[in-house]
Length: 408
Image 1 (cartoon, rainbow, N blue to C red):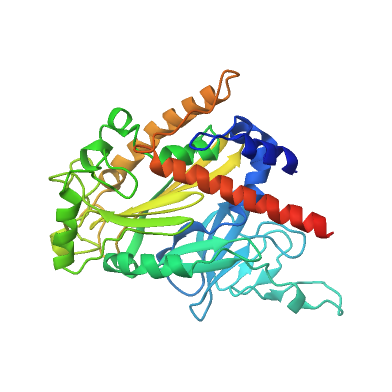
Image 2 (image 1 turned 90 degrees about the horizontal axis):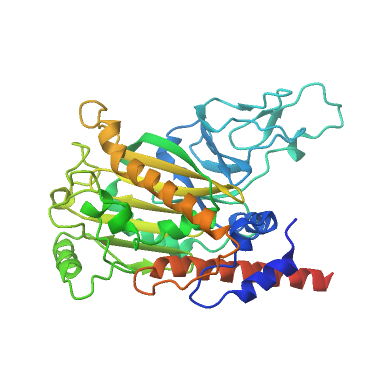
């Protein structure tokens, strides 16, 4: 159980523009607080509609420590559920994907429709009402084919995000894509350190020489290039071919299409498309990268040939799982139009480099000599934005809990 009074003191102790107090990066009570105040009450990007392409398909994953299910029923509608049997709570589906006419709990064979209703429960008394024992529902939304779930009773508003991202994402034809590769990477560090690292490229020139070949590591915030006019030229060129670029943003999300470094058409090791069959053929496939990010846990990059998704999932105070997914055009043939090695090489290498950085960061934060330092307003603007958002979200939860306790 999180100690809310202690969390409130830690948040109050944070200096504006600085990192967080040590305990918010390593205390088990702070970790429990983050799960309840942040992850349970936020929209979480779990994958894509094309991962559950037809009736009977399901996808099981984790939101922090909580197992969840996303299904497509026999009518093609998408549903979200807690992955917990209404009998004695057993997990119904192991993490992964599958296809079946119904969901069957492996423990006592209670059987559910993909729309959540309990269909069968053997040897229960006549007084037992199946209609009262359907799967527990969670909120699920598709934003241009990207799936988001929220475990809160009342989720944050998502309509503005959906309205802003879908026009930017539409040219990438996610409905005509497929999942080409997925990876999991364990980092022995707190999830917030992983996210701060993912929200800045101050470290990129020295730590990610391969990524720095294509990615404009000197840009800040919404890819502000300063006196460099490349983004303005890029915007004019894309306007001529009818491709929107943003930027757009809300409290917990951002999106912008930006130019890659000169001579690069994709975020790959050599700058060339890693897939011959493009997802977006507008502009001869030279359309930069559409990046969107969502708090508290992820981002994605969509280039003409591929879409890369990055997600941070907390496991323990000093353990985080990085989930990465790659989409390609559904007609692209592995071994002919692309290879997984070429497709995933850049981001896999970048993730491994980041793991070393973040684990080293955790080791230093755990030192008795740790004192939160200031962020660079120019080079770490988005890391600062994330930490400010975290503090505001945490503070709002404390106010809500305090009000509820007062009313009680």
